[in-house]
Length: 624
Ligand SMILES: *[C@@H]1O[C@H](CO)[C@@H](O)[C@H](O)[C@H]1NC(C)=O
Ligand SMILES: *[C@@H]1O[C@H](CO)[C@@H](O)[C@H](O)[C@H]1NC(C)=O
Ligand SMILES: *[C@@H]1O[C@H](CO)[C@@H](O)[C@H](O)[C@H]1NC(C)=O
Ligand SMILES: *[C@@H]1O[C@H](CO)[C@@H](O)[C@H](O)[C@H]1NC(C)=O
Ligand SMILES: *[C@@H]1O[C@H](CO)[C@@H](O)[C@H](O)[C@H]1NC(C)=O
Ligand SMILES: *[C@@H]1O[C@H](CO)[C@@H](O)[C@H](O)[C@H]1NC(C)=O
Ligand SMILES: *[C@@H]1O[C@H](CO)[C@@H](O)[C@H](O)[C@H]1NC(C)=O
Ligand SMILES: *[C@@H]1O[C@H](CO)[C@@H](O)[C@H](O)[C@H]1NC(C)=O
Ligand SMILES: *[C@@H]1O[C@H](CO)[C@@H](O)[C@H](O)[C@H]1NC(C)=O
Image (cartoon, rainbow, N blue to C red; front, side, top):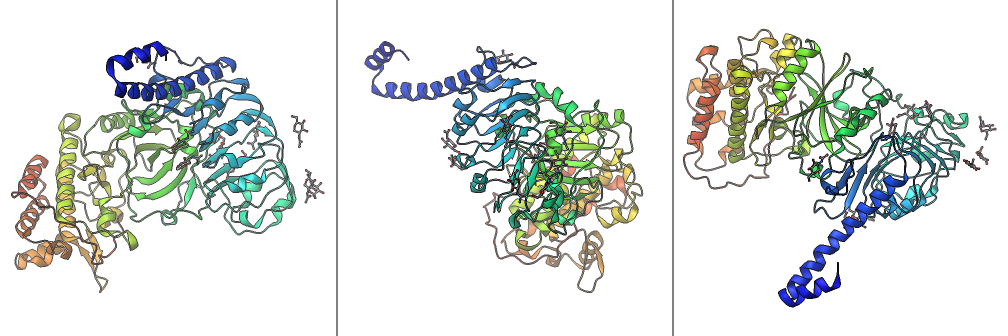
């Protein structure tokens, strides 16, 4: 900023402008400093791949691996895995990025000792230096990184003892120091938030401190035998494919080693920056088991094992702002969200704190080509009432789908959630859920030349979008998976009577399932539930029987009856639902007609009726 220029402006435009000028330029200066630091860093550290760090282009917009704060004033993340860096990091380069929160330089060949000036990165929360050639001691004072949440320094040559200062890191949830040359005894950390630990393959001796004995023995493997003497009856870690107990809901480690081949190919997808913040919808996609996932006290257990085929990679859809690769995904800490019709769903938190839902498909019965075609059809549906498929993966052993995460859970969990999770939904909200879901299904039925079938409409697959309208997920999978065994399919209670083979789902059978969903919203009851006398009640049949007697309020959720003046609307919606669940498929209305009818339900102006906390317990549903 040149002084004469300021003064000219001052006299011309007044004091206010001067203030603006100074303020704006201060932010610009900070970013400029960050930019310089990055250029210095890259210039002094040789790398095999060229970085597109062109001074002409905006740092925050399109420099590979660089991410900025929301206001674009500072660089807060730098992710440069597998760029082929070699040699030591020059002092006073990266350490000038004082606002940095995420630093990933994993899978390079950076040598030298740990850059002590990283101590200036006071906001550092995620540090990934694994798979490099760092040597020498770990920094003595870890307490400078008060916000450190995850550190992975594994697979280097660090050879000091483990610093005691680590015990001041209250935020630390994940610490991986495996496969270094660390020696001495393990300090007693007392880190209550620590969920993942790996100290294996070092030269540690002594005994495992009590606070760490909650971790399985395998995290201390490959050290002095003295460590292995403590007794903990925990199950062995890693790799127990396919037999997860969905109810345990423990944090799982989707670990994978053989994936380094992939790392090399990811440079192209690093242009992510602030986009992660924008990435539209962030809610829990929960499939099946409603209820909150417990935090804390979880030990990493089984993980996805798979044999890696280097030709296969994560395929992203256009416009997807995520930047991660399969390795990130498999390494992410993951919680089981539930067991759905087509496989397990996990919530995966990536190293940069992005949260996604990973669905692991089982029983895919089609070849790669056909699978990909179907993914393309699904992935190209962009609609505010359809949950977007972000990416997929296909290999012989593993088929994955990646979606946004919806933190509020499914409509099933809202309607039938257990315990403290129980929430009452007012009529307003239920109407919006029905409207949104109908719009989403209408979009789906219009796709692929009007031939696409959802195939799995149920409340566990409906979420709320940011406008609180229903939003549909899990579509288009019935045709690419093998037929489900009848008991499962029947238990779900959404299946149209004419459907004997789940693969043969049709648009009319979707309408039937949607009708069941409407009944669920109206009655607050699960499609299949048991009464006190252990009698199994099929919702459609039950509604029929009640309605046959006379149109009675008995059918409706007692929650809804507390709101005045909605009976007419309830009855109208009930009629729509009944039209959807008629026996003969060709007598069911088309989705566009259904949508129109639902939109007509609300004649009058809606006063917003508050929902109440005074909830009546509703029988929990298995939700599968
Ligand atoms: C970077 O941004 C400029 C304009 O802002 C654009 O012309 C250029 O194509 C972008 N480069 C990359 C690699 O995205
Ligand atoms: C660290 O982050 C906080 C917000 O999380 C911010 O207010 C603060 O300015 C940051 N510090 C630096 C040095 O950027
Ligand atoms: C750490 O994080 C908190 C909140 O996330 C923030 O307020 C603080 O500025 C951050 N930085 C430091 C150095 O504590
Ligand atoms: C660690 O390695 C360095 C050489 O890289 C050596 O000088 C030092 O003595 C080693 N320290 C320990 C504790 O083994
Ligand atoms: C640390 O990195 C290694 C190698 O990439 C990986 O296997 C391990 O899972 C990572 N640990 C954590 C906690 O992410
Ligand atoms: C440990 O790291 C070395 C290279 O530093 C690697 O060759 C070896 O496979 C790693 N061992 C384990 C158990 O990961
Ligand atoms: C710990 O690290 C070692 C060496 O990298 C690895 O072989 C082992 O699988 C890791 N254990 C866990 C639980 O991640
Ligand atoms: C552990 O090893 C260090 C040297 O690496 C040694 O000084 C210390 O006495 C050992 N402790 C025990 C309990 O063996
Ligand atoms: C393990 O520790 C014991 C006792 O500290 C020591 O005698 C022994 O030599 C160590 N073994 C190895 C392989 O370092």
